[in-house]
Length: 520
Image 1: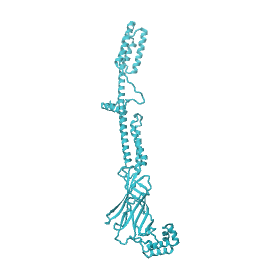
Image 2: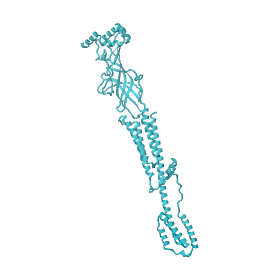
Image 3: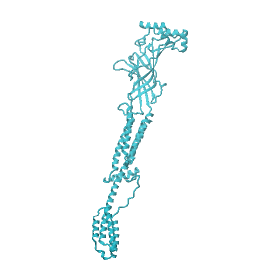
């Protein structure tokens, strides 16, 4: 020991300095009362003076330099402060216990009034340079300088608390039902295995005083001793690796991220059930897609940027893809629904497969009818034979009237000659009604004056009436045929809506069961 160190110790001895205060405080109240009487305190002071008279804390405390010094390490996990998945840093509060034997700090208990242990500051004794290899703290702060306990046989026990930040490889493939394995590797920074041998105090880390974490559940903390030869050096370097087994508590993420996504996903198939005339089918799909995009961004902000996509992220992507496909199919089905009268007829295979089998399977019975209007009963179209029969009856009545009338009415007037020309020139339903009414009135007027109606004007009247009724019947047939084609295409669109609705319901159900099965 240098003369400067001896001078400082002699000055402290003469003034009763900090050594006496530290030692007397380590023996409890009974020992303090004894020191007041001058018995125990004098032996403690004498023990301290004798131990550190020629002691140096700079050298490894072994009598033979070739001898290996055994250091026993024991870790107690007190609390998990933070787990930063994005930066892959674990912040934990540990109690670190190191035990070794100092060959120069031994004494006989009987020589010092039975004192078997003393507690002094750790800076006054030699300490192994045990550090955390995978430290991620930018300040790189070590353990706190607490007191050490020295026993009479030279055993030194150093208990120190430490808040450590260690790098942890985070695997978020099954987030939020994932488990992590964070390793804490402790070893000597400068002493190799031929100088210091690091041993396990326990096979696992001590979890008896662990404070439960709200997000992570600790499954265990096994310890393993390793001997590694690094590329820089040929000597072996022992270390002890504690593997902290963590499992995430997924309740928070289930109720805040997963269940809202599942409920939103079940809205996507309902877009197929929405009536096509409502005009909100595409808007519903786009709204659901935007809502899922917001949830996807919330998950992406908390996850580390890596190639492993989280399980909930895969679920979001699959659901968004499904909703995109449903929106595209909705646009296609709406195009089919709004086929106009000029559309081609439904193919025969579509009529047989979709309108017959699939419509019965998915309980689609409406044929071109709205759910708010009653189903109309379509009667037979008017035919030419029916009109001709009515014309024949009128002709018979006219013939009977002609036989009973005066012969003076047989000459046609110029006004009566114009009636067939107007009737023959009529081409629409409105013209037929006006012309027919006029002719009927004129015939009545002539009948009142001359008591007879001519046969030739009545024959021309029935022929023109037949042509007009035939034109109306053809227009009615064309209109009904166009309505039938449009109704068939609407039914095809409705059946396709029901098919895709159940298909997407089944897909959402199985995807939800798949991701919820991971939680069990």
